Image 1 (cartoon, one colour):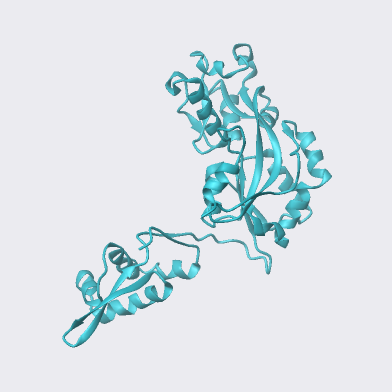
Image 2: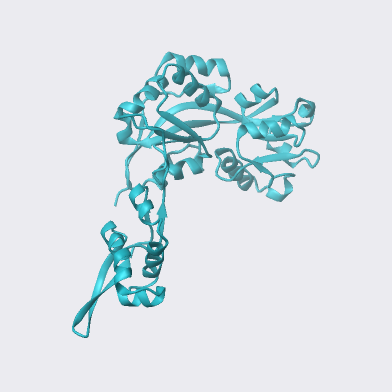
Amino acid sequence: MGALFETSSADLVHLLSHPKRRAILQLLMHRPATLTQIGEQLGHSAAHIRHHLLPLYKSGLLRLVGKRKVRGFHEKYYAATARAVRLHLLLLPHQGREQVAILVSSNDPLLHRSLQLMDKRREASHILLLKGDSIASLTALRQGLSRVAGCHLPQVDGGFNQAYVQHWFPDRRMALLPFAHREVGLLHARSATARVPPSLDSLLDPGLRFINREAGSGVRIWLDQQVTRLGIPPDSIRGFNQAVGNHELLAERLQAGEADLGIGLAAVAAAAGLAFTPLYEERYDLVLPWELLIDPGFQPLREWLQGEEHRGLLGQMGGYRPAESSEPIPIEQAAN
């Protein structure tokens, strides 16, 4: 028996919408049983159980594991093919033959503006942007809930993204499509600027209120790595456990005076009128299955990233630097 059966099939979602079928499946996840035994536990005849069990068997959720002879008849033992079932169903706009591409990404001003400009030309009408941190984005891609993920995860060796993608997709050839380098640093209200030294030492000032990013974001992972490396107890940072879900919310909290400093993007600081102290630069990539690179529906975004308008927008917004190359970086399957 496998550990987990995952599906995004609407037919299977419909099949398991019936409470009797779910009850049968759950019993057979626990141990094999015959129609008679299942009927005794659920209070129904074997014929009634058979009516609901056969669709589960034909769908692949159940398997035949044995037989026993009872009063001249052979009773069959059935078992679930997995110990748990996880269903994914996402309803998307109908666009004829075009397939909507789901792109899950954290709030990135450059990506958001790029898709807006493409949409005006009707080049991005098939791209749906959903918000999520880098870990959530990779998880959605792994589960089949998206086709592309935005990722900016720091590695302990100083690189970005490759090791995470190899870990999430050991069984599939993937691609990293370079998007941009982003400047990350301390965001703070201008009234507090004189009290904010240009380093992580400012987080240890008990007079300054810090606001963190949520676990799973690239910024939070970077900060966790730094406090571990420097031997800084997280509890010594005032507000370390107070977290927000994206860069814009961080800026709003700082503007409202609910905190004195946080870590975020230079582009967000400029848009919000906040002071900015640089800390590091991160590489932001789009992660996708290798075969999607030749999908006609993905070509407008790929062409945009290779074009002059993308580079011009990078310069206009500030806080970004072009990637060294627009060519995809292959991430191969792990060796068996």
